[in-house]
Image (cartoon, rainbow, N blue to C red; front, top):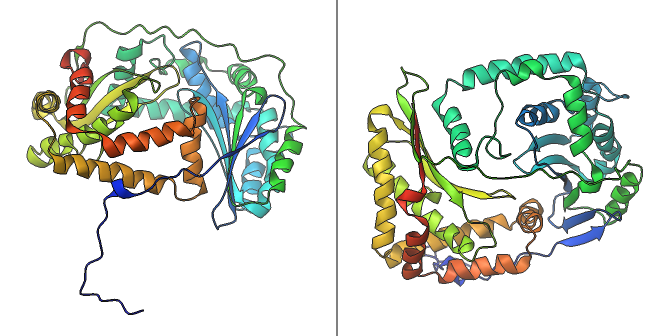
Length: 427
């Protein structure tokens, strides 16, 4: 077939596409745990993730949890840190231990044919991490040096402060590590934290990639060798104690040339009827490079290199954040323009062309996010961990396709009222 290259290809709107989230299988791999699986793709690689719930009970545990994730690969009874690294590199694999506000996250990625060889090492680390004192001391000094540098940065201070304003310092989402905490951090703190939070009976497992189905049985067999705690994780009380005063100006560095702006508020949870349509409104407002905020404050005014808005999603409460760094002399002007853009959405209907542009951007992004097993699992993880099903995904597609300018204005009037937002600048 000869192509006529003088003719442009037909352009289709993303709203005309059919979206289908591929299925995710589930397996009861113990009487307490479920493994979710997406077996797809063409490349023989797998990603195995373990999500362990984490809800800190004290401010000091912020430091302890960071130390645990930073040191968990520093040695077991059988292997030194070097031997662990050598084993992982030998099989061309990657093992990362990280955390967010709600979970400790373990991720092992490897070629499918080598995965079974690495599972025993993975569970050895999770069950028998030793946290040697010499490794802890190195970690402590590096953490102190790193924090000393970061505390001079306005954006670092702003990120910590805005969470504290919204949730309160005693809340797990609002607390943060203090420099002096590292002086009292001990091996016993880290070991005890590990015993409480790294419990396989609390874990949810996710496996994605291209693999033989007998790999599920291999995981079951390895988990059969793991010790399980008999008790469930004690849940912390999560009272929110938000700061009453909304406007805050902090001088962190008197010689700073920039100010870090954070405009934010407590936000609705994902079970609220407005949650999905507000994802659309947020994208239009500040959620992508062509957004209203970017067009005004970056392109037109030249106050910043970038400004974004986003929903910070947590299991026990979301927040909505607008973030940017600007020159010190234009910081207040930039905040004024944020309020102006909110008002414009509240009072003016979005033009049809812009409405369609944002629809195409969001739906195009979703098409990219369901291409390949790892990305498909990423979609499913969001649904599973939040206790919702595939219907939520389908509902979001229908919402993005059909939202109107009138609905956008109605949502803006509900969720973009200036008096609801904290207004923080850190210089």
